[in-house]
Length: 238
Ligand SMILES: C[S@@+](CC[C@H](N)C(=O)[O-])C[C@H]1O[C@@H](n2cnc3c(N)ncnc32)[C@H](O)[C@@H]1O
Image (tube, rainbow, N blue to C red; front, side, top):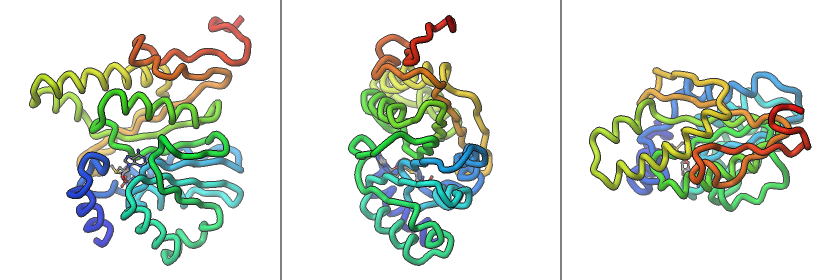
């Protein structure tokens, strides 16, 4: 209940970046952290926008002893809330030495390497297209070859907003489609439908194939995420 009150307060104070009235359900948290079920340890894991820690709890339940877990959160009230958890919540305290909370926007995170698994709670559908483009550029830059990026969006939200909004908002949504569509086409390997969440959500799971790197900004400019090979092998595998 304390989490819900804190979350709702931040939703009213910082609607644009909080992007939800309540923390994610445990079902959504489990789907977002599902890519941690397999894979050889030690792994480097990043959670972007942990809020009050609803998804964080599901991630730490899947942490292995040698994994390292970074969290990056913009909102100071949420950072304090998370620090309280790492000081007093049994499950969080048990993994405290493996975890680090960074108080800054993702765009300014000073990472000392790439991540095998990134879980994002950012409310992308609230942002301007150029912001979403720079967020995707940063996320993909931080993702290790073969690594996974899992994020959620509320089901059909862009389609529903398009039907009920004016011209400027429809243009913004078209800009988002132009960025997100190609990224999903080229990198998505799974989508989960989570009905037990308020509102129901899709979890998109993307993988950056080995031997390729994304071209920053390419999705918005060319309609493709333009993965270019970094291992000297041409696109047709020769
Ligand atoms: C929709 S909430 C998700 C919270 C939590 N992951 C959950 O599912 O309950 C979005 C979170 O992203 C954070 N956020 C928004 N923009 C951010 C940015 N640029 N960098 C880091 N965190 C950001 C917000 O402060 C908020 O905690």
